[in-house]
Image (cartoon, rainbow, N blue to C red; front, side, top):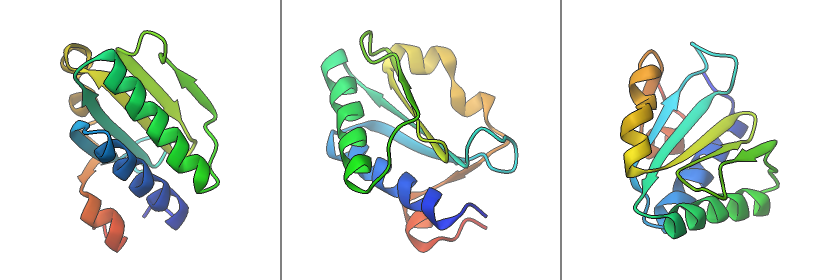
Length: 124
């Protein structure tokens, strides 16, 4: 089961995405299928300004909680912004690229979880 820090980071990122009206936010626990991270968060925005605002809010909220990104890619073009926080990786897509890359299908061996699961700390 993912550690408390990873769950906390995922919860903060989820809420930051929600605040900026992200569409179809998904959380996938990948700790059993990958060493990359414990969680992937995947969300969509309708345009460049929104996807950048979503990324800015995730970074700001996680920064306030004491977490710094290891790396952020794709911010300028904003069709796929990847934010690597070690324990979590946040993927923010425009609608077209989300459909094209279909990370949910690629990572289907991971376990889809809800915000409520994160809040309870229960993913079983």
